[in-house]
Image 1: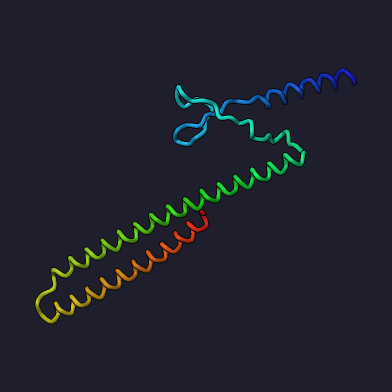
Image 2: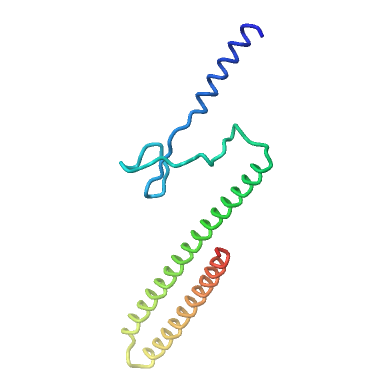
Length: 157
């Protein structure tokens, strides 16, 4: 090898060593990861089982471990997605019920203005029909949300 090739190889080796340096990673109580310790009792996370992008193994046992880890990670991600969807649907359910209750209160307040005459009786009947429609609509939406939640809970198991 000539002198330039040796110099270039040495420079390349130095560069690779700089990028291969491993930094400590800490997991905080809020679930976030960071390079600095979260508090005095923080200990670095063991990353020895995590593979490297640069150095891969072609050993068959290693590949099966990698495949099982990928499946495990994929299942975890799916479970997290499903849990978020369930939480969103539960919040939607609460919102629908709150809107129903508010609409019912508004309609009940409208009943106070009905007089004891024919027009007032007709208005009260109209308000009662509207209240029944509001309750039916909310019940339908809640049932739909409940079915979606049950379906997601089955997927989660």
